[in-house]
Length: 150
Image (tube, rainbow, N blue to C red; front, side, top):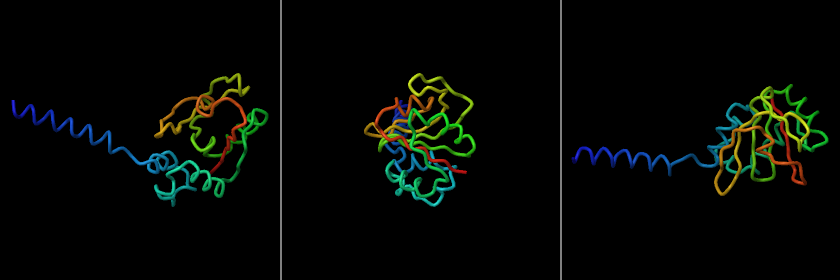
């Protein structure tokens, strides 16, 4: 009985410590951007906010486009020529396009939107893996910035 109780408590303690010991915001974002060379030298601390990523991306991207419903088709066509496509919406959403071929038609954007992964800030970061129109939202007055990297 004592062995069983000890084992159960040990498993519970490990589970609780993993749940509460999850990565910091900077580590979460750094993991999303790990393959993009422009962020290689950035510390987790310097990537703790989407605003900080936006500043670095603006300085180091090979191309930057402010996405609108009018230019998104051409922007996504251009993006296919680059190795990485990162989109930032305001100060709360970051998404990396992961598959241009896997897409879903979006009525509001008027095109087949590619698949991506990223995070939306809702208190803490909430992981997203979906077609990017479901992550970046419908076209409106918010600025949606696309950064392209090789």
